[in-house]
Image (cartoon, rainbow, N blue to C red; front, side, top):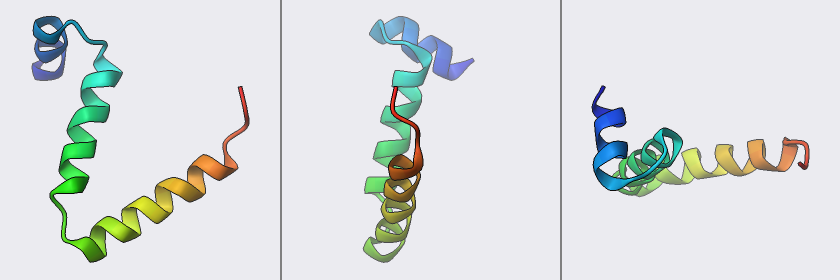
Length: 51
């Protein structure tokens, strides 16, 4: 419900709200953990089919 309410207040879609929250969470991580998460995300992006 909170994500939906934030989206309504900020005029954003749910996935946009979730992306922003996750980005902020990752940015607050210690550098070693942040590096691991970002490397995993890059690997997934490389393996995703193009639209």
